[in-house]
Length: 169
Image (cartoon, rainbow, N blue to C red; front, side, top):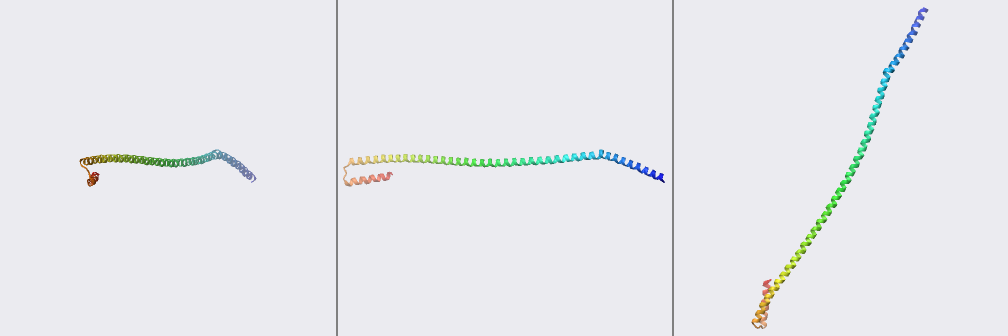
């Protein structure tokens, strides 16, 4: 029995040594063929994740920069639009004043021309009246020369002259 016990212990010892060797070999293969590739895959995924986060942060920064530029452009556009409206209003006001001044000048020219025409017509009418009065005076003088006047004839001539002047006007 002792021999059997020694044989059993001997077998158990070699079994234990074989199991330990198998465990070391298995550990070595697992480490070489499983852990290293898994660690490489995890490192790649970590690098990809960090790259994605970096790209996202960069895209966010770019978006914020574009937003700021857009807001700046919009502010500039609003300012330019306000300046254009102000310039257009100013130009319209100047053009309106210019039109009013032209109208005033035209009205003044028409008024002065009308006044000159009226003055000329007045002179013409006065000259015509002078000519008629001269003609009437000549006819009165001719009648006076033809006859001698007394007070009644004199009054009759004056009345006739007044009637002729009234009819002529």
